[in-house]
Image 1: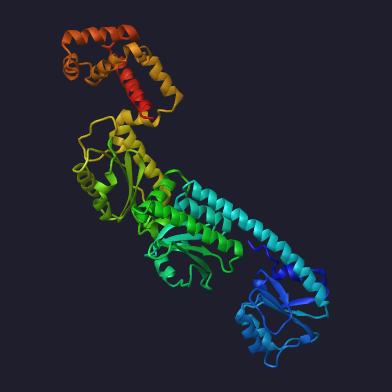
Image 2: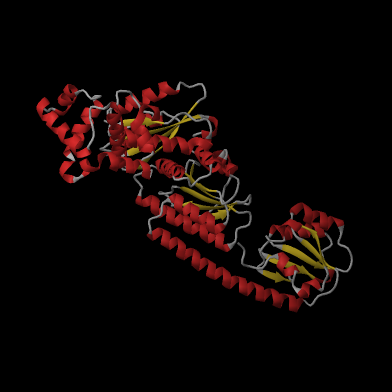
Length: 500
């Protein structure tokens, strides 16, 4: 991320190589950015301190400790003889890059070369910051939500980014290729990360920027970067600002509910790997990797405030929940291995159905977070396939749907679509579509015309006339069980295609 020259880049300069540099300590920190090379008694943060002619103070170890405390990037000592062991040991203990030049160098030429590198880096840094501002301005104008902003921030910073609320609960997380377990036991870790001011670095590797300001402070944005560059600071501040604007626009919405929505949406679309999904769910208090998971989709034709009407029911469950589309609410239950799954589903379904006319669809239980998406997709499919029927059971599963459910799963298969056209084609013309309901009643009754007449509220003679017309249009013997079975499959497929 650094655009300023690093210590290693400076050591690679030809004028420095002539001094035959030897790294005595802090080799792992040679990637530190350097804002200047300075020959002076008062070191400043970010500078590479240059000591010529081996002119170290008598108590070199104590001097080095004081120099490190100022925040210098490293120390280069020009000395023909070996440096005192105490000085080297002090640098090793501090992790401070300490370099000895065994031969004399021209300091003016080195500082000149570093000045050129710094100027080039400053220009690149300026351009980078302009690009960051432009990107976040676009996100703000687009009304991007917190999860989107966090994802963009992590991609730009190339570091993990966490958005938490004031209770230190993870609302959004983008790992940027880091281990998702970074946010395990997040509340305990977060409470130890303390900074002052709107943006600061805690010294343990976290750059922190407040989201909002008193009295409307929503939480913090945290970027995992041991030594943040200017661009990373800008990213943190701009991301926190855009998120604050989004939260202000949705101030009446619960941030945890929005986090649930973002997580379940990302799961259903396949945007998350199972490990990241499990880590983010744990951070929200739902241990999906230690539970039996059952996906439930509650579907209604009049969604309204369905989530609000059953919010108290959901609060008593260990689950993730979110509106999946205009007419359904998704719930991912995390049950204990010894829980009665059927009993939990019955109680939830009956409680929900007492408050609203809904269809409650459930997946088969799964025992791994890797299967969570499969369970959620299955429950969505069951809910969609069941939406046109009547169900006496508290909840519906895939096996309850029978042929209708199978046809829903196969509705996009061109062979199924061809079967519908082949079997029902003439009835699908606008002038004959009214005959579809007559045929369906007759087929559903198993060929019993008395029952079909009662279902359609037609007289027997009117039903006979309609069935005769259907038989003529389809050129089919409706008294044949084989024909009725084929037509039943075609009707189920036609209904399933209509639900797409």
